[in-house]
Length: 388
Ligand SMILES: Nc1nc2c(ncn2[C@@H]2O[C@H](COP(=O)(O)OP(=O)(O)OP(=O)(O)O)[C@@H](O)[C@H]2O)c(=O)[nH]1
Image (cartoon, rainbow, N blue to C red):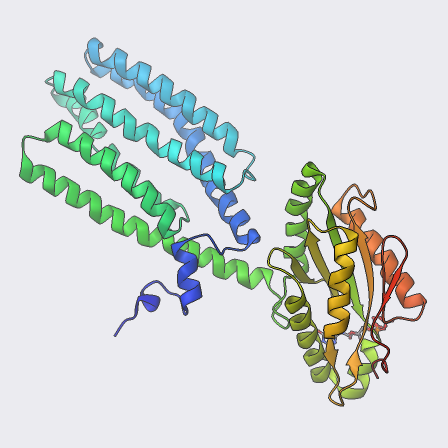
């Protein structure tokens, strides 16, 4: 029998939970989802900012003046809101809250337009093109609900949009044709069917986005973030920490004599060491920190809101836990360079990584198996035979 997971195209409880709520979404997924929402709002908002007021000319030509003038005022007001939305979403990187608020506003405009146009439409008896024009307004609630399908929303977000928009639309339909109960039920039923299809499409977009992001953002061998994803994260983290003048520590880690491991034990053994190292790094950092596979045997650990003294504790923990072991039990060591935003007065994340890299180089030059900190102090791996 088809399970709920299969129905939604996911394989596990965790993946399903990611469709229900954005609570556990990684920053990078949050960021891309908000960018996708904003990038889809922008062209529509811009198009509507132009078309909605212009359409008023048709109203002026075909509808009686008492109705067309009021429509024109509503159209101009809607055009201003759409223009403002296009202006806000043009930047794309606006964050999740603003993206969702912009979407809600964009969908509220036609919903409210429908609410206000209903009593005006009731006033007039029309034929021909005017009748067609007036009937087009009746389609607004369905168009609004259907357009939700264009946006990657979680079930919770979709639910919020659906409740508000369906309630308003149903109320509008009731006011337009409330006397005919059968007709009203059919209309609300149609609204709910469109809502169901939109919801499915919206959730599938979230699923697709997450699966694509996971593929693009996580290294196949180590399951750590890729360099590209790491750079994206630093870009947004640095912007945030830079604004708040908050601490932000970076560890640049390079395994020692890794070429020897490959040469003596083989590439597969080398891969296994990389996997063990990533597991060890992930186990030593908190949620909110990030471990990145920067290159072959190079790793970057990002510690947001962490000053150098606390970052030293993380390094101690990594050194005590151990990164990996060779098949004979020999621990693998690394050279580490630490940099910290405030202490190093770094102006960009690139400068911070560059400083960490320079200290890593110093650690290599001065004997390996150590970390060099911003205040030039050194932390050492426990004194054991170094790798190979
Ligand atoms: N097994 C394996 N090896 C890799 C991978 N990526 C890079 N390497 C190897 O990592 C080694 C890095 O060697 P070097 O840059 O010379 O550095 P090192 O031997 O670690 O020496 P030091 O850094 O000076 O301590 C090279 O032999 C690469 O082929 C990978 O995905 N798997």
